[in-house]
Image 1 (cartoon, rainbow, N blue to C red):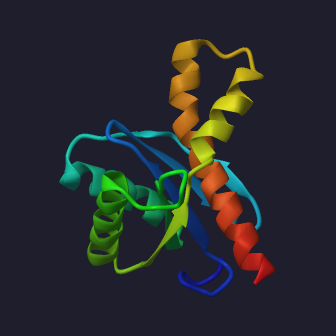
Image 2: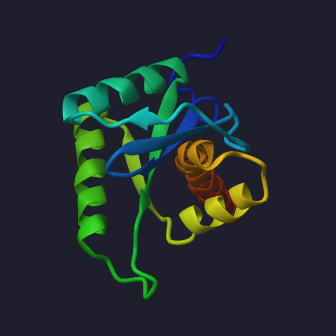
Length: 147
């Protein structure tokens, strides 16, 4: 076992935050691959933070990446401001580093990938948030590794 918080040996969590659900993905301990977890049904701020706190503890998460919805032009809008506040709340509540990451293409890509499967429309809707979180995490890890 490693000590919690050992650099390079604890996980990164990515979130695709919507008004109804939060897609969640975590990295492996080395920060190379991303796996999707159960989507969190949003209730209220306290319950949402409680649910996220359970994932943070279970997976020994040391950093959080939150998808930042930008307009196609790259400009920020109302949704971006909501995600900035959400990221600030996460940082204040858990004391972890929170990164915002451009998620413009993740939901589009998630939907494209799911159209190629045989999932029902209902199951596809539930899977989009999880896959979007995986894509956010993978793109963030790839960009960081390239630095």
